[in-house]
Every structure is written in C-alpha cells, then in structure tokens.
Length: 128
Image (tube, rainbow, N blue to C red; front, top):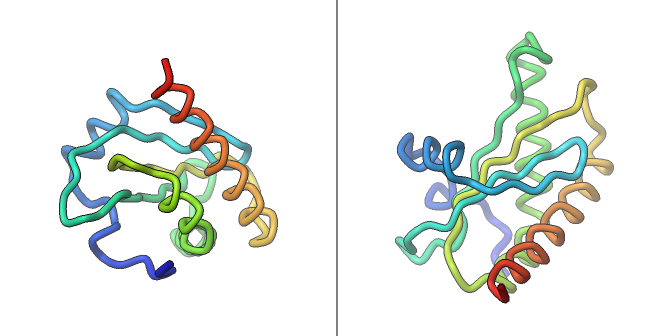
C-alpha cells in the first residue's frame, strides 16, 4: 500500500467542507474528532482529508502548523488499514480538540483507534 499523502487526497473544496459541517457524521476519540460524509468517487480517490486546529486554543500559527503536521503524519501512517476496508468514497475533516501540544506516539495510537471506530460505525450504518 502506498503510504504517500498526494495532492489528490487533500480536501480543498469549499463546497465539500461546507457539506461536511452541515451534513456530516462524526466519530471522536480524545483529542481527535473525525467528521465524515460520503462523496461521489472522483479520480480514483477513496478519501479526501483535511486537518484543523483551533486558533482559540493555539494562538501561534507555528503551534497550529506543528500539530497539523503531526496529525497528517499519523493519518498517513494509518491510512492503509482504512483504504483496505472501504468500498465507497468519503471526505474527512480531522479536528484537534486537546488543550496541550500532543506527543506523536499518543497521537498515532489515537488515530489508529479513531479510524477503527470509524470503520465499525460505517459497517453498522451499512448493515441497517
């Protein structure tokens, strides 16, 4: 499985981001929250992902960018499990909810648990 995070997989569409926050479902595992919505498949991309850290909690852009880099790296390392188990396309937005700057190992294990929780929730939604 390719572990890159290419440009095609990045969430950039304002319309899709608005749709995420208005119609999306969510799963959370502190300090991360995942908001997702099903999308039409395009460019053979299963998931488009975006990352956000609140300016209210982290005033300096350097801190926000560092946390986003850590979250992106944790996602990149764990996305192979996600891609192997998905059949439809999704748009993701990862939100950081914590108050302190995270440690990468903690963030990586949280990302693993969050993605497995997402897979379980989508499987139960499909079965209903």
